[in-house]
Amino acid sequence: MFDLDKWSEIYATVRKHKLRTFLTAFGVFWGIFMLVVLLGAGNGFENGVVGSFDIAKNTVFVWSQRTSIPYKGLKAGRYIPFTNDDVVAIRQTIPEVAILAPQNQVQGNFKVNYNNKSSSFTVYGEYPDWMGVKPLVILQGRFVNTLDIRDKRKVAIIGTRVHKVLFGDKDPIGEYISIKGIYFKVVGTFKGRGSTEDNQEDAQTIFIPSTTLQQAFNQYNRVDYLAMVPQEGVESAVIEKKVKELLAKRHDIHPDDVRALGSANVEEEFKRIQGLFTGIKGFSWVVSIGTIIAGIIGVGNIMLIVVKERTKEIGIRKALGATPWSIISLIIQESIVITGVAGYIGLVTGTGLIALINYLLKKFEAEGEFFANPEVNLTIAATALLLLVFCGAIAGLIPATKAANIDPVVALRDE
Image 1 (spheres, rainbow, N blue to C red):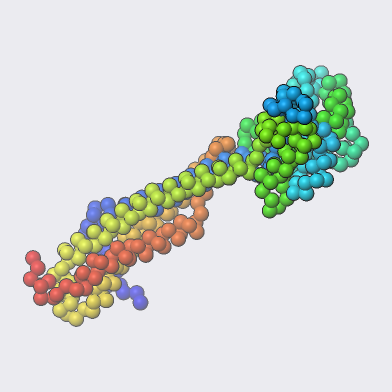
Image 2 (image 1 turned 45 degrees about the horizontal axis):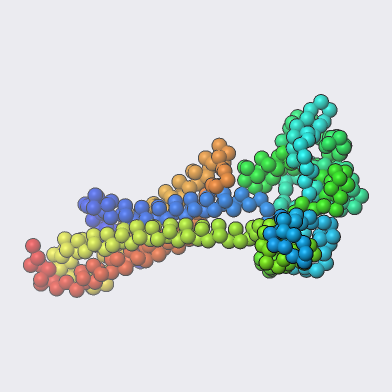
């Protein structure tokens, strides 16, 4: 039931001691404000770094290197070339591999030409499966398909920088570009999804069918490296181990030779990054909760002072028949008001600041590789605010109980 008299008394007390109330409430405000800002900044940092992963987060890459241990009469220092047969063997014997994308690269120094324009770009041979490893944004046309692979078609998908340098504002679809004197029909344009650095690399890339690259550029039956994604529920480390064991057996590599085959496990790297962000969030909570606790203790101390200052008033109330609960509720209500209002202002201010930063980042296109889309989980923030109000009630309980136990006779003699 709404009690106007109690609210009037609380307002009068707060108004009478403005500075004291402000300093007490500021500790609570600052705690919630710091919690929201730190969590928002942490999420922005996480979004930026995670967003820089432009490949599937459980991808495994395997590439060939040189052996370091002699084996079966073969000397150390052998280079291990991957072949199309290796790709077939992996697909047939390791069912845990969901996506397998072998990749080649056109070797040597060369320029890509269109009419009287030319420049140097990176040319990769790909399978359609590459889109499952590193999803690209197809701006026009299409990516490599199975018919391109089967028929060894001379088609090309070009990045945005290639488009701009060779064609300018002209539509490149259907036009022909020359790579080392061999003409390829442009069937698509694309851009990357990842960080700025990766997008710049993608922009200067040309994709052609892998089988076409092998045949056209004298790289028959050669695979530079393998990109793989495991089946759902299978850890990347499982396929990494099985694939390397299979390749070691097929190419007579010593079982203890760890240098012959190189690999990179994106899933393990991603887990390490997630652990870092968990630590950052934990630190944010520790700092913020510590500040909030300090503020609540301050509220409790202030309420003790309030009770001490109003001892005679409380004695008169009790002498006139005021119940202990009416006195307890008055003190607790004042404590809740201070913590609740201060916490709410801190929540709104912190959320507003994060929203402003997010707006400015998008307006000036300043989102980068390490910070993007800062956001606040309002459910967590609201829960923290409700917990804060509860703690405020607890903070006021001790002084309220003390006030309720005051002896009216002793209180009336208080000076």
